[in-house]
Image (tube, rainbow, N blue to C red):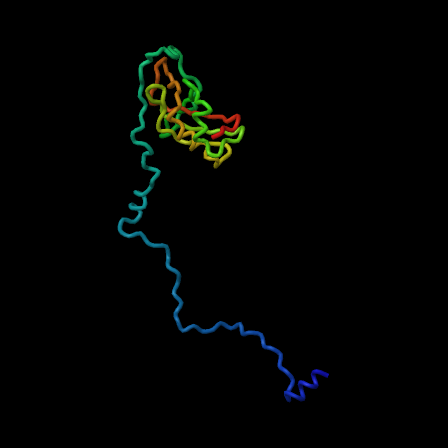
Length: 189
């Protein structure tokens, strides 16, 4: 009944909507291709090869120096447990550290971000210096990863006191040592 009313009122039956045309519209502007990777200017591959940062020495002042054994600590005994040649910064031998005095809970607590969860650890490498000190420390690893514990221990390392490695009974001031700090309980700030 409704159809008849439309027919009578409009005079013709309603048309069904037509789907939109899928033919592309012609664009009078020319299509320009996307720009290619920029070409190197003068210098070519020589310039590219000279920018290879793997050929730059990481620390030009790295050297290994010896010192005299004046306190008799470990006289006649070599440091054992060398981590291996080439494992330290600039390919130097990395020895396991032996504490002269271990850092206290209070010395570390101010550096540990939001406390350290029990069972976490930080591993750093430092160069030994006079008076059982360490300097120029680098992060080697941490657990949990991304916790910032290795960075925190690098910052706290100015307080660390370690025995320098000994070779032939001679203290090797300037040698690199590996220091691992294990957190058995969470320090408080």
